[in-house]
Image 1 (cartoon, helix red, strand yellow):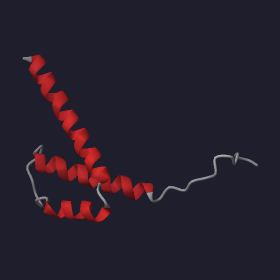
Image 2 (tube, helix red, strand yellow):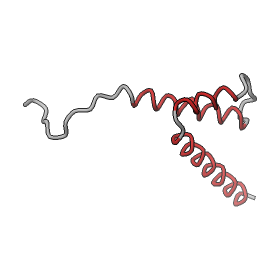
Image 3 (cartoon, rainbow, N blue to C red):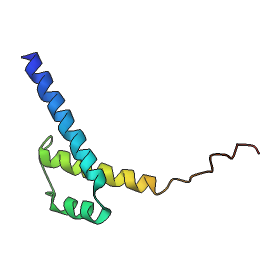
Length: 79
């Protein structure tokens, strides 16, 4: 029984990773449109709730990435 549960959890994890990878390929407009199709309220632990969380996480990652200041690699601190 534990082996079956472990296989199911691995499959679930693989599925979530595949969804995250797919969401990362969507442009911002498509991602926002996809979010609008999700229900306003969903049951805890449901597929809808999980998808909504993954969409919001992707949007937050993008927001954070736009606020990053890059410094030249050859510049050393204190010089």
